[in-house]
Each structure stands twice: as structure tokens, then as C-alpha cells.
Image (cartoon, one colour):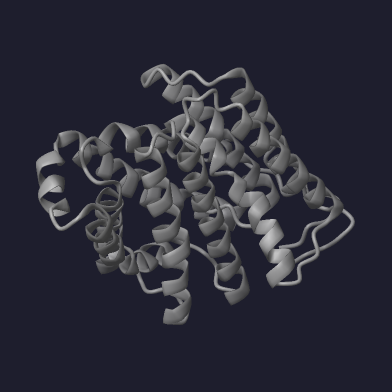
Length: 316
């Protein structure tokens, strides 16, 4: 699809033949952003006493089970495996560990969006995709926002948890670049089949880190909360959410759909504030606003250039 000067970049655009998004698709995009934003609260609520890596492995075991109903993606196995290792195993292995180490659910939803600016930086270095001035400015603003968040933790966010969450964002960004370099479109089949390589390594890592008794601890801590959380994260956040989002991308310009992802941090912070009593500090809110502004600027289409493919991916 082409990005010309007629491409609109806004959340609410009228329906029609000019590349606008229908009211129905706007509602669907808002639903997906809400599902993904609330996902962080559900993870923290359900994890409980279950070791974080085993909890993540359980999620992707459920996702991978969908291979019986979803056709295999048209991609080499090495690409499918690489996407699974970085987008799923690395991202969520680090994310779940970060949240177990004290990363608040709301702030995790915000910091993870650093993957957008990290993707731009990696794509410039690995794929030689020269960033536009808007993207360079967005990277700069995003970096400043992360620094403000890091310095304004107020002592209630361990530095190691923040670092692990940033590693999750970096792993997601690497997965984006792998998917971009392969030329394979990211869709529900790639999401499901790439999950096959995730559960076993996560389980082995959990045993290596937490000890051989980790499975017994997991069984003891696997209450109804963990099961409901897994059903939500695997069924709604991963399968339903991604299926809807992929459909939106197939019907609309990426530049009209991608900005809706910016609703994820407000939803994660707001729901964590309301349900988990996680009140962010003023510095965290300020840094988060700067980070979201940086992502917003980085994702702005360059109207002077036509490009058949989006330069960044924010798949979830």
C-alpha cells in the first residue's frame, strides 16, 4: 500500500474511499488497544506464586495449541522460529520476569512501547533503512521519556525490573526487524506457529533459574486466578486481539491503524491505578507522556516519500 499525501494520520477519520477508517473499524481498534492494555493487569493479578517463566510458558502452550486450526504461514521454519524466539520467548520471558521483580503493570505497558523507537534504530543499522527526520526526532523524544521514567521511579520500581522490561522491548524490536527482513507478513498464522518454539525453552530456563522444584511450586500456585489469566492472555490478548488487528491492517492504511496502539499505555496505567492501586509518580507520568509523544512522532508517515511497506512494526 502506498503512503501519499492523502493518507490521514489521526485516530478518528471518516469512512469512505479516501483511505479513511470506518466507525466500525475505529471501535474494533479501540477494543484491541483496550484488550492489550488490560493484559498487563491480568498478568500481574494471575501470576501469584507461579514462577514467571513457567507462567509465560503456560500462556504460549495454549497459543501453540491453535496450530490444529490455523494454517501454517508461508515462511521458512527458520523465520518462524526466529520470530517466536524474539517476539514471544524473549519479549514475554523478560516481561513476566520484570513484573515478578517489581515492575508495576501500568508502567510495564508504557515502557514496553520503547520497542517502536528501538525498531527504528535497529532497522537503520541492520536493514540500512534510513530513518526520516520525524523518526529520528521520535527516537530522541522516546529516549528522553525513558530517562525521565528511569530517574523518576520514586524508589518503588527496582532498577533491575526496569532493565528487564527494556530488554523485553528490545527483544520485541529484534523480532520486528527479523519479520521485516524476511518479507513475511505477521498475521495470526505466524503468531500461532511461532509460539510452538516458546514453551519448552521457557520451562527449561525456569528450571535452571528457579531450581528443579519449580514445577511442584507451579502446580501448588496454579489457582483459578492463574487459569483465568492464562485464558485471557492467550485467548483474548494473543489470538482474538491479533486476529482483529490483522484484519484492520488488511482493510486500512497502516498509518490509520497503528496510532491506536498508543491507547495501550493509558489503558494499562489507568486500569492498574484503578484495580491494583498502582499510583504512578508525577515524573513517571511526565516521562510516559514524552515517550508516547516520541512514538507518535516516529510513527507519523512521511508525506514526501512513497513506501510500499511500513517501516516499523508494533504487532502484539
